[in-house]
Length: 467
Image 1 (cartoon, helix red, strand yellow):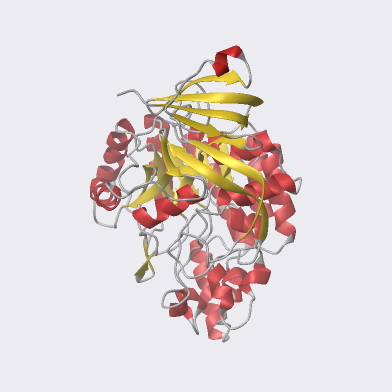
Image 2 (cartoon, rainbow, N blue to C red; image 1 turned 180 degrees about the vertical axis):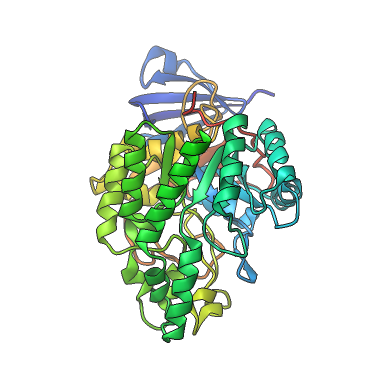
């Protein structure tokens, strides 16, 4: 049975165009666009007609950095694939790429299989996986080739967290050399974890135990140094590099310099670095623990440089690094020792709205909003134009967005499985009204009409910014 839906009267906004157009959806894909009011558009008939007059019609968001059910610091991220993808849909995101974890001593395949088992049948929206490589050896390197062939085309390494995820420069170089051959993309958590651990030990010895010290020991210079080192290792290996959750202006400068030299180096930042700061980490009564994430929040003056990087394309993607831990019982594990606070913030539901607020505030244009939140992440990780745009043949992942609706962000009204909001009380202009995933209504006029198991695993091709 063929199913048809028409979205009428909205302003279709993609990374490249803004046009008042009707959108015809057939069998889960975008079939055609036609200027609103034209004979061609008026001739379309469909079982379902959605009136988008006065609204934006935008591609579903693509969040390429989430951690559902991630084990960390003796606990687990509080969102499951079911709760996390439902919350993502509420926020206008229709595709996530989550991180499967290789445990030290185990194979990549074991880690990937474990994440498939967590996600399968539970997701409200489509999903893919990156692979965290914690143990580089000859077997792992061979497995990387196999994973690329089956659509897991990106591998994350950590210069931080010694004893957990950490890779030394030799292991990083070997993985980069392999990715240069197999077309994979190395994603780097760039912080000098060895030096940070020294500073953590020294701070705790001085009795500096509050959450704000998390930001003070994870120094911006150590993010910049690691970013520089990752770039040079990638240059030696002849491999592309994608640096995740860039928070420091000094790290942005390293990326800009590399890109000016013509290197295939890319950078991502996250809403927390654009809207929050060390002022939040310093909140009294252990409230600052809610804002502990790595890389850490920085002083406010870094925000202007991050916005600038997004405008100049020295930063190309905004993802969430969604990794929620409840304040009660999870963040509280670090009372009296900031180093034991689980690292991570909730945000998968807030990203599209926060970035729309950035449009309202004049930081970025409407099309740049869609570019950094939908189109570029899809291209970067081999999903475009299936995801990230509204064009004939694309999956019908479409959001009807009300640019005039006002909302106040709060844990009382969000849908993430976490007991606080990192943006509690923040007033935003703009809100998701209706969300379609592959043509199926997941959010219908601010009601959840989706289901666990609608979302399917999405294999990916290699990075589309490389020759």
